[in-house]
Length: 90
Image (cartoon, rainbow, N blue to C red; front, side, top):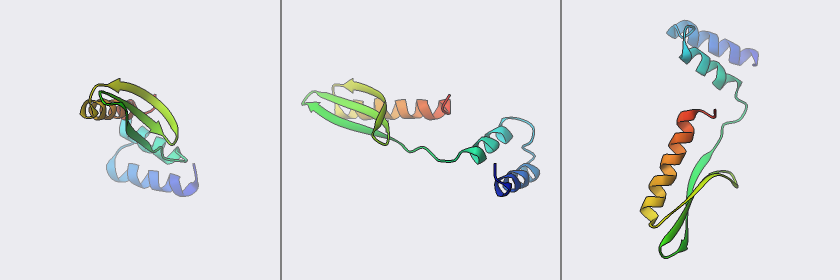
């Protein structure tokens, strides 16, 4: 971690008392991250009654699934995205 990032983390920890517990660890993890990940949900029509959803990072599909309507595909893709975000990249 750079000295600037360390200083910012120290200020945050001192101001909010986050040195004890998960929030402090989360902030340290964020400071160490070199590049944020951009995840998106794509919904692709395959047939009139078949839609594919994908959670992608760039051109790489991380999760995929198939549904019978566009709305359901969007909902399932969004749910998969939030599941990935809630796991925090575990």
